[in-house]
Length: 287
Image (cartoon, rainbow, N blue to C red):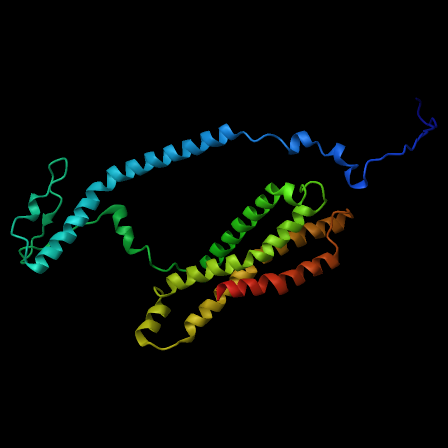
């Protein structure tokens, strides 16, 4: 072949009649040996037993570590009840000792003869902050609800793919997985609303607005405003992030003139699906 030479290409096509149905003519290109591989049940059982063993080991360590604390707390409660009823004799609380010979309780230096107590230190003082409301409660509740929605979405799509023999393999129809993702996202919005609303109601009583409302007994507008903000953040958080990312990618595809951009009518259908299905379900779950 020399520079400037003219090359002539020919194509010879022969059509042959086939009896294969139209919907099955693409099966030879789907590589069933890859998509329908055998399940390694022994590996799954081995991993399951390993997880159970590690959970038991961690539980045993925690039990040995916290056993003294549990015994001390229970003894403190018993002594307190005994002092109230007058059934505990003086010096009886010092008779309880742990396996190392150390007393489980100590008498406090006070004027009360039977004043007992438990001194907490380190991580044990965290119990006072467990039920304290976070600083940005509506945002955290919206993030929690969105996370539960994503978990439900992933589990739904996985189960849909596993149930392939019931409705057809997911790799046989183009866009079937994407359609399943959109459907499960819309239906899982009720999970996001319920999770965020439950978390907000659980901790709202510990906020300053909740305490003032409970003390006054009046129906203030602070709680309603915070609840509405939680609902709006839950509705807009994930769609806003996805819309920004999708807009950037779609704009780049349009600039470079590729065929992988999403048409405007498809985006409009997605918007209507979100407005008329996802948003009402999220509001219903929050209520």
